[in-house]
Length: 385
Image (cartoon, rainbow, N blue to C red; front, side):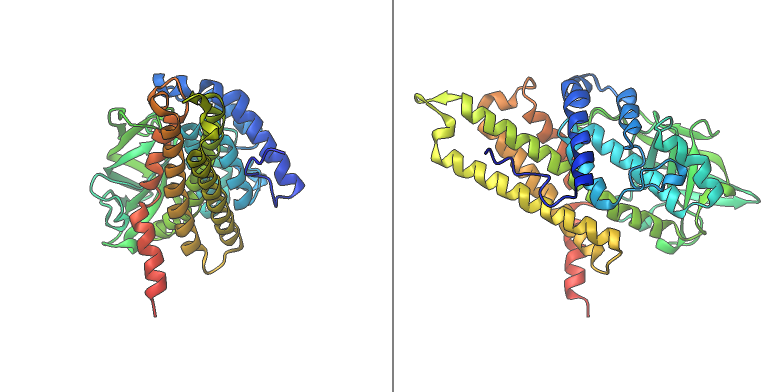
């Protein structure tokens, strides 16, 4: 028996089934196109719509508005599997899912039924707008303003590094409707084509090239008050609750990259010969491969434990999500980087997929809260009275 650091151990039969569906989709629909999407910077809308037909457009959105109604653990399992085919595309799907969940969870019935069905089918695509040019980790200091005038908010400001920006249809925007600090932030949903909504140039990135990234710009942009999620001042709370799940999602995408990279390294060590022997016969490389597989399994266990805690609403969920994001994204990047090293010079060529996994998951240590912020959250929990 070949030990494939089994991703299905401990799962229910139902979870194993949709994990297999996700693995198969990744292998047939994503992996063969991953390099082309990266090189030509293609946003694969039709492939994502095929994924939505399998229920992956609104995985943890309620079924009455078109979602699959699955758990956070189920979601992690799916994103890990999909990422073995293309990390960048799966990462965008995870952001889209987070936006749909925010509307489903914090929106009223009219908002849920207006936006969620077309997002779950991926007829329309969503972007999450929190980060600004001057506020990244310090999200509570955001400056984008929304002044209320009757039944309308007039939105002014800009957002930076927005995945899907300019190509997507729905924008979930955190903006300031009140005073300074987190309590002055509200959440609005904008639709593409709204007068005053504009976009910056398409950014040139190291990885994540199958999804466009642009600044999103608001200039006297009129948004109906009816498009506000929750109450005024609730936006920061909505953002943070979304990011707890986002951290699990992005950690899961890192798991998929590491899983694929360990398999690539294992296969390469078996066929590449140096000094008259396959590299797989070198004990040092055997030990390194064992460490990579061990790190992957440890990271997976942390991520799935945090996903369960979040689903159950446990008190330690925020800290566990932060720990899982910190550990998994750091560990999985190290695994992918080591897999590249095992490929030698070939690993540095774009003909070999391992380099793309390295490039695509590097940003996971930065977004959804930098890993330095994850350390701050964990330390604060440890030191509080």
